[in-house]
Length: 283
Image 1: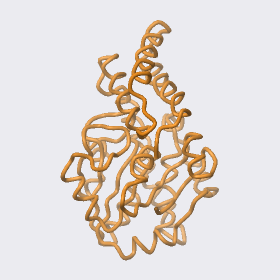
Image 2 (image 1 turned 180 degrees about the vertical axis):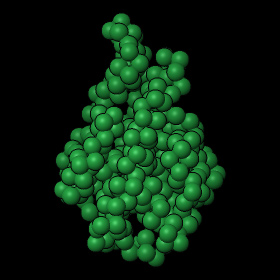
Image 3 (image 1 turned 45 degrees about the horizontal axis):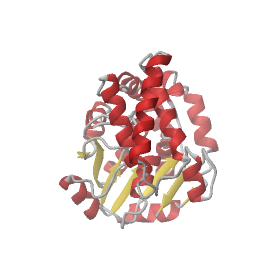
C-alpha cells in the first residue's frame, strides 16, 4: 500500500501523542512539528509505504526528545493490565463453541483497544466487543483450513498489551502441536511490542521468538534480517497483526492472514470499508 496525502495529518497526530506523553509545552511542540514538516517536505514520496516515512519521523522524534522509547512506561502498563485478566480471557475461549474463532476474535480485539482502556481495563467492555464483533472482511473458513493443514506458523506481532490477547491464540497453536515463530521489534518504535515485551508476557513459553529488523514502523519485506526473511519464506501460514504490518506486507508475494482494525481513511478507502472496521482476512 502506498503513501496518500491523507496520511500526513496522521503523522502529526502521532507526534502530538508522544509530545503529550512526555509533557511538552507549546513551544516544544512547535519545534517538533517544524522538524516533522521538514522531513515530510524533503522526503515524502507517493511510491513509499506510509510506514516507511513514519519510521523516519519517529526516529526524529526520539532524537528530538533524546528518548529512545517514549512509550516505555505505557507499554509495561498495558502488558500488566492485560496479563492480570489472562485467565479470564482463557475462560471466554473455553466457554465458546469454536475455540479457534474465539481466539482470533480476541486477538483482533487487541488491535482495537487503545491506551485509554489499557489504563483501566474493563473486562466487561472486552466481552461486549467480543460478543458484538462483526468483521467487515471475514475469511475465517479459508484461514481455519490453512491453519488446520499448516504446521509452521509465523506470527508477526503489533502492539504491547495487544500481545497478551495474541498469546491466547499462540498458546492454542502450541497445544495443537504447531511450530510457531513469533516475530517482534528488536528496537522500540511507537508502542510496538519488542522481543523483551514478548518474553515479559510469556509468549516464549509457546513459541520461538525472533526479531524484525531494527525498529521500523510496520514490517518491510525483505527486512534485511536473514532469520526473519527465512521464516517468512518457509512458513506454512503467516499471521500479521495491525494496520502498519498490513500496509507494508500487503504486496508481498505470500499468502498472509491479516488481523487488524482499520484506523485511518486511507486504508478504509483502499479496502472499501469503514474506519474502525475489524478485518480478519486472507490475502
